[in-house]
Image: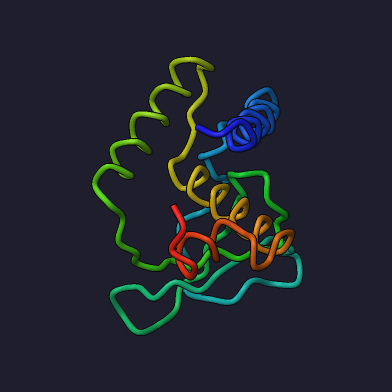
Length: 139
């Protein structure tokens, strides 16, 4: 694992530990079960619409798990991963959980990795890993 990615994961673990010290695991939500109505003015929590078995949208509370700002909405998308990437993700997740005694969602690792890739592209543009690996085909 690269040094900057490792530092970012450690920072994420520290943020999640802060939530755990307040008596809540980062993957726990205090959300009620999904409801079939829009939130009232009293509800100032981040919400998303989720298509359920019926065509009526459901509203769910979102609690950030990766330390990202609460205004970022979660959107589910199917993507394909290489088997070795999935194995690495599972092994690293378990290793971090054993090492730090903290539950770390695999989604948080993937979201953090994507944020780091975005940051690299914004910072380096044509010399970013994204361009060099996928466009220029450098190894």
